[in-house]
Image (tube, rainbow, N blue to C red):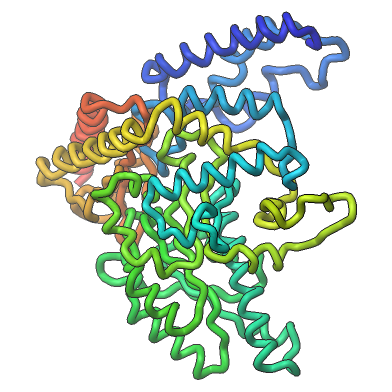
Length: 481
């Protein structure tokens, strides 16, 4: 397969396949029916000694791979949050894979670094982020593409840890590092993503989950009380994560209140807007990020909801030097003459290696444009509102949280068990795919608008499937009683 003409034929055949797959995705069953271990008997026990033809590989995609694929881009897929996909992003990844540079330093491939700097400025301006976050402002700030929001949370935590360690050691030169670290405390809502707790484990520090209010939002007074309590115990508060768009129900922490507490207490504030951040490209949604100027770092995932394929998690830092200094290991073989004139992104992230991911942003933003992306987000939110109305039209159901983005949280009125049975039936039937969540012992179903192919008819289709299976279930339950 080393021949360029073979490559061209194979690539053209794959592009045709991908186009047909995506344009006809709603015809496929959204959830596979295979059992664990299904794939092993379908392929040989060992790799071939001599090459198979690309035609043989192509023919095996439907036989081996597709039976075990959950079709995330189907309009019938409503689980988790969306993962983005678009033709410009797919093409950009082909170019990234072809250039195949590892952009850890500026000199390793100058375009890889420089395009990323500019794309994060483009993106920051689209969200109307404070200029202190943007490289073009001439200050310290700037953006970087991380692999995931989980990485961004950990990177920010390590930056906050380094900053606090330096501050405490200046005040108490005789204190040991191990004693300072043992007393560091970070905070988040009890509704925050599990990756915040995991960042604490990886960073070797304590993270406290604080109770959200009755609207599942973390408030400033709860944070202030926790910090005061810990200060009295001799603890060192150093890091807070505010979530804009929680995984459970898409609640928005009160960023402005939290930010004011962080500023008063000299605590690093990181904003995790992994899913909902894309919606801030629409001015009407920006009220939900009020107080962002008080943050030290901000992150969202264009690869969730902004048509940029995984992985592309955008992170901005007002002062990246704390992260750079925390990660800076500078062997001779990575030094270069232009050091300090442009970012060496290896110092801004956990791994050393990095792909040319900014190409995806460049292609998507140029070939779709900001207005198209805004209309796409607005349409997805309107589809969620439409589904919400369908749920509210049936008095057997209740909507359990305000619908602000593309997520509807709902349940059958009654005990958790009936909702668990309903979800099992929905996913077992395989026509649509949902996942559940649970807040304060209330179990509910989440319907996320995930596919770029989703239309009003898909909301009606999904609701009719839920209604039909509900009627079957309630009839059976009644007969049992």
